[in-house]
Amino acid sequence: MAARQGAVAAVNGDFFNIEESQHPGVQPTGATSGPAVRAGRALKAAVPDGQRFGWPLPQGGSTEDVFGVGTDGLARTGRLTLQGHIRTAGHDTLPLRGLNQYALPVGSIGLFTPSWGATSRARAVCGTDNNRAAPCTQDAYEVTVRRGIVRSASSTPGSGQIPADSVVLLGREGGAQALRALALGTAVRVDYHLASSSRTPFTFALGAHSIVEHGRPFPGLDTAVAEPRSAVGAARGGHVMRLLSTDGREGTSSGLTVSELARLLATLGCDTGAYLDGGGSATLATRDRTGHIVVRNALDHGAERAVSNGVAVYSR
Image (tube, rainbow, N blue to C red; front, side):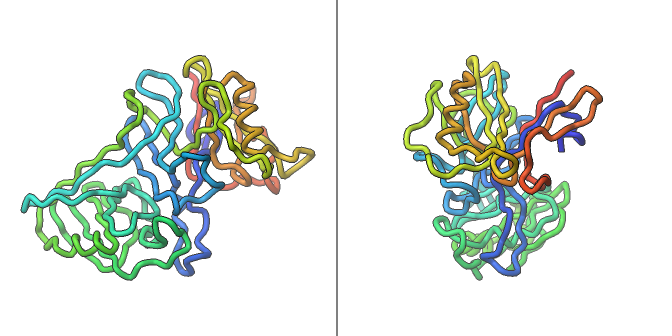
């Protein structure tokens, strides 16, 4: 990913929908658990906390937690919450509770844009808000909206690339019932944004979970499980961003606990810090003097894992 994008350094990003053994026949989407913003544009929102993949959240944490850089050029942690509505020609208003995410809240409607790609949307109606392993609902319905008009409908989630002039609305339970009321030819307008806990909008952001605040590690972090770790931190008031990956399954390293990771970030002068996906995903790569991208950490089983996103650094 770093080589293709011409980066000088990169670290892997958010936890993601890596497998679906709990739902036989359903394809994993590879989509991340948390929100994502790129070039100031909302790419996706967070799945319900109970649908998240990865290690347990820190106390008070949420799948809406992110790390990124604001329009002021400063790195920071924050929280991004989806706010949106679906408005129809009859002036009915429906709440929008999903954006390009692999799991929708029970009873909700989610929006899928061309950014979702060609992956099946079937996983979005599986599990519940509190139980990722719960069965897929049989009460689902989706409509395709092209240029603001409902053009087609289906009782099962579809797949395939969404055209540039179209979006798909997918509902489950109560959300499915609401979408069934939209007849073909109905005019629909969808408005949404990711509301930030910070006054400054994010230029880019991805799911990450705070473990350092005001230069101090969070209390109550896990002290038992040591693994390869990846993390990001902001130092000098956000003017410096640190990308970090540690070993833990190969060579002589035993890995770090989340508590040890937080202390390390604090030792590196980070005012705030957050952990990313780790384990077999932990990867830090930098460009060497010959111009080639080289992985710097000891990879799990010596191989890179295909991950969904990451944080990259570029040079002019």
